[in-house]
Length: 168
Image (cartoon, rainbow, N blue to C red; front, side, top):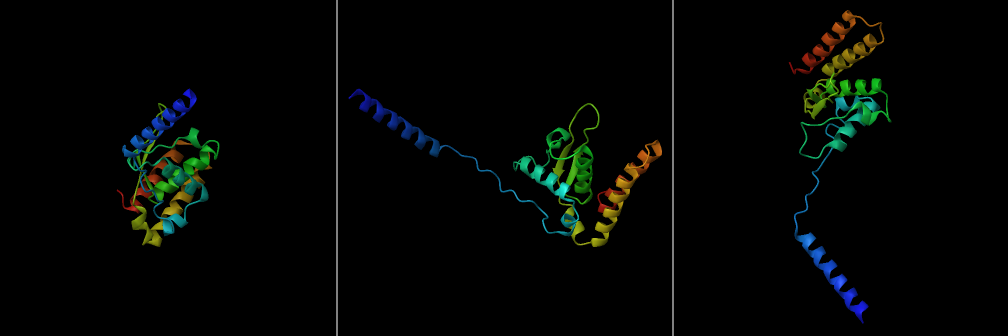
């Protein structure tokens, strides 16, 4: 007899809590889509760059559009540091992400944000060609022997990348 009474009480308490949970505010995850799929700049991305872009969208909650970070440690199981940095610069070059803060030294991670600059590049294939040429020249320079001139040349090429995009 006692066990039947306890069993009924347990069921009653459980159903009451379920109703209370249904009444409480349940936040809905924001609608997320990968912007630019099928556009000319997206077609020029390497498969590694697309993978990195998808990792950024996986970290996107709807409220952190201007506060995204992806570190070398998080992707080291999937790709090398060289491929990761190449992918990041492709995404920056074709206007899918912007850099809010460079990590550099002091073990800070870089902060990125999603950008809509790819929309202006989608209409102009000549600008996409020039961006592709600048990115290839940077990769060619990276293979050469290190020197201060090489670093300065890479820096000027990256600055010219922003000028081609119309950002500066």
